[in-house]
Length: 87
Image 1 (spheres, rainbow, N blue to C red):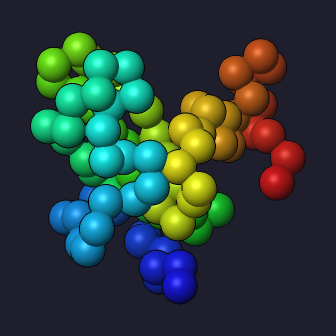
Image 2: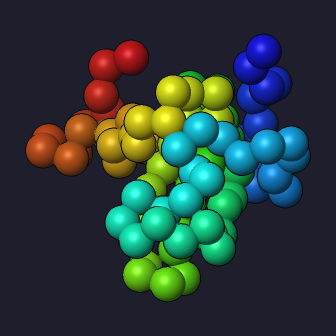
């Protein structure tokens, strides 16, 4: 069951088990990660993950399949043109 959307720009403490894909660093495998849950444009809840060991970062949909999100997925801005991506 998807979580209720967080207000845009809100940051929340993790609740429950980690989102799929955020259990371990995709680069080095460390499980000692910083996880920040946020509300972003479009009402989507995402988890930003940062690894203190190797400094790899990634974004994941809180209710997703564990596939990392692109910056366009998170910001809604097309990096090639700097414009809002269609939704």
